[in-house]
Image (cartoon, rainbow, N blue to C red; front, top):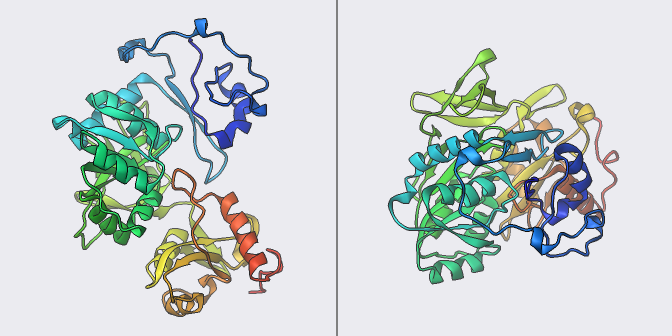
Length: 395
């Protein structure tokens, strides 16, 4: 078949008609052909299917190799195309940076292949280094523990901070782990130390995006005392460009890519200080949303946390921020607020501050606005609060 192959989670099947408008005709491989969302697709005769073969030479790959959609978490999803040179170039840079092929290993992924992280690290990277990869996704921490104990080869785990958090909360100790690759959101120092202890190896954190692919890595160790710097992959560059914005350049990209993150550059690397578009303004005062989340997350007794603005951007300046916290037993939202006073201006104190059992992370470890909006509504109803508009005081 010469038409595109698309990896799409079942929850997104409603986008199939939109994808047809973007990429044209394509075939669907599914184990639930009776699903109503597939009614417009006609079954293929098995004689039309070709037998699988080894990965052909890159020069014979179709162009583009892949058409990707960004998450849309910061706006409307963008269409990103990947040609062979991009995939091969990124794979070579990762191979040199990670040096995994020095011994036989097996890759196991908790990240879905339809996400850029899983697509790159659980599908392409094992092929470039000649490694075996599990043909199933590892869904639960206990499933990973069982796999690590039964695998004849050491495992390289492709995972997310949300999954690592589950491992550490269960206080599991894994065996036979050769390495861990983590991406999709930053690891806090506390989680990085706990995850490295749990897995018995340092955590290799990946910095990248759908537009650029992987750009840099850093190593998180069980005994780290300071936040380590990000180091660009071999052969690529992350540096300050025009208008003081960070730029990514690579020999396999046609032009530099301006990054949406604020980077603090040092002699031998950089740190991520948030996004250019994460500055929030309340009552005429500005603050970084990433910084607010970091302050809240580091309060003693807070296991996980995130700020949330329940109103749209047009009225955010006169709106109070809310927040969700996952607390240790015996810790109250009131005590968290007391700790926050003095560490930020009062206008940024979260009101309301909801205590929840867990945050609604997606399967790729991201917090979607739609999920947080639903959680906000449920918490407001639970606590007997009014609507979004009614809960916003005059400030």
